[in-house]
Length: 97
Image (cartoon, one colour):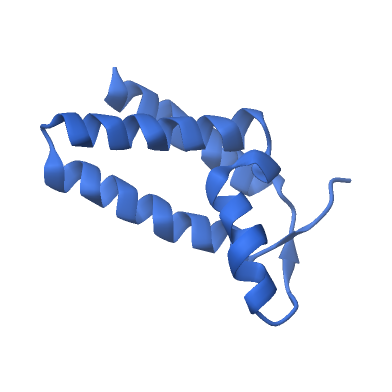
């Protein structure tokens, strides 16, 4: 069984992802929106294929945010968020194409 993860990490990543994708929609069509979508596609790919430990927003949460919070009291299996990263990657890759 994989190590359990703090439930706040994927939520933090989802907030950043939402902000990035909203900026993509607001600034489209532009080079800036293409760069943002490429960044988000890469972030999804790292989370889906490299694991949540390599997902940039997860790294930011673990290194910067989590140390400032109370210890985690709820944990979850990493497989559902990893699958969500794969689905996000598929949609973002189609959008980028």
